[in-house]
Length: 377
Image (tube, rainbow, N blue to C red; front, side):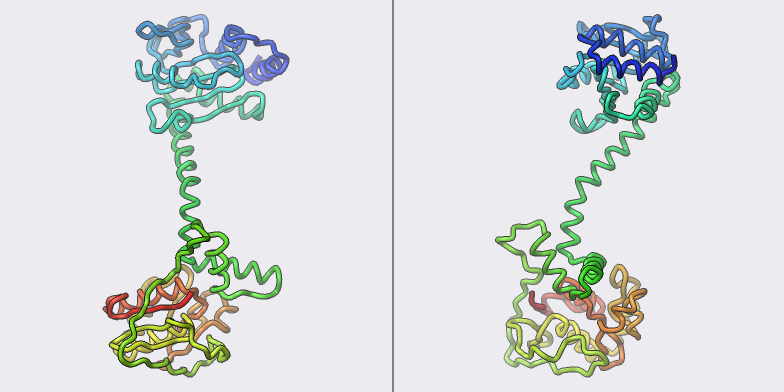
């Protein structure tokens, strides 16, 4: 019989209840599969039963060369293996054995005791021979437990490689909520556009990025809905004079002319005066115009930055350059500055703040001190 046939017979025996105690599991399953995997089970210097460890014993030590353990196997009655990891790990640490296997005949747990983490985190693989596909059972037992692989060192190398993969997967899964939270809180432009596009495909109407960002903040963000954290909490202190930002000429107005009422506190403070704006986009436009008047090279230097957003430019000579590959956005979402440069306006409040921060870096101004903005909510 080959290993596949042995496993098939063992599976049938487990389902039929043929292995009623630990001794039956040890003889009828473990030794049988070890022999099928190439181990000389008759040689007690290679497959050492009841291996002694300073008064303690482990069920089997698989040795290579003879009498030098390369792996330990601890055997339990079917369904009785929970909680036995600690004892097995103590045995493995005592001798420095790199691979430890805990099995009740049906479940086979492969551990790397010397790695980091709790017992579960040091488990490379858990194989349930009844539940798993037959081919998977064969492949895993041969990978970690065949005599040829253990003797050559290939088994421990494979186990360590799989452990690294499991560890990376565990770390990635643990980090996903944090990454998602940051995407929501930072109002990632790609995320906002994907969601807006999907809404349009479903209902035929495309929400603006502020609407999408507000939905994410209120419905998805990983923070208490009872205490929302505004994207901006900057209060501009009015200077002696207050000016209303003049309406600039646009090719395609980014801000509809209706809604003349001012939003309280929305605007920017620069060079001793506070300029009130109707919304965050007017703040962005007003800051760019003010910086361009202060320094004629500002727009050129800002546009020369190697990176603006992840998929777009914030300032360009033509609308098409603002949204590469997105002609639908380039048709409507821009504002033409007095200098002839174009600013992208398909941006959320958080993105507006980041763009203005970038503008301050280019203009060599201190954001929050020499320029104070409030883009609204």
